[in-house]
Length: 186
Image 1 (spheres, helix red, strand yellow):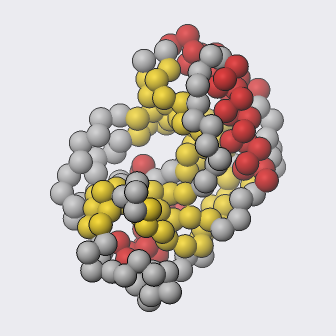
Image 2 (cartoon, rainbow, N blue to C red):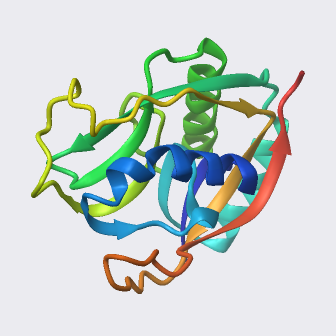
C-alpha cells in the first residue's frame, strides 16, 4: 500500500521565490520548514492505495482532459488548528476546481475513498507552526503580501515518504516523491 495524493508541483525557481517572499515572516515563527522540493498544492488526497488500484488510477488520470490555469498566491496565513503557515490564493480558477473534481471522481471509479472536502489551494511552508512573537492580524507589517503566480500545465501523482523532522531552524528531509505526471491542455 502506498499513501498517495494528486498535486500541482512548482518548479525549483518558483519555490525559491515563494520561500524568499515568505522569509520575513518564517524566520520569526516557530515550526518545521518543508524542504523546497516538497512544496506543492494538493488537488486530491487519496490515502492508502494498493498496486492494482494504483495502475487503474494512473490509467484514469491519463484520460482526464483538463485545461491549464494559473494560481495567484497573494497572502500567507496561519491555520491555528492545523498548526501550519501556508501561502494561499484569493480566487479559485474554475479550471483548477474542475481538475480537482475530475481527480476525485477518477479515484472513486477505481474504488478509492478520496478526501471530498472543497478544494482549498495552498502551499504549506511550515508545520507545527507557533506564533509566539507575532500578532495574528493580517494588517501587521510582519505578514508580507505575496504576488506570485504559479502557471499550472501538469498535474502529478505523489507519494508520502518517511516523515523524519529535523530542528526548527532547518527544513525537514524530503517527504514526498512524484510518481507520475500528466499534461494539461493549453
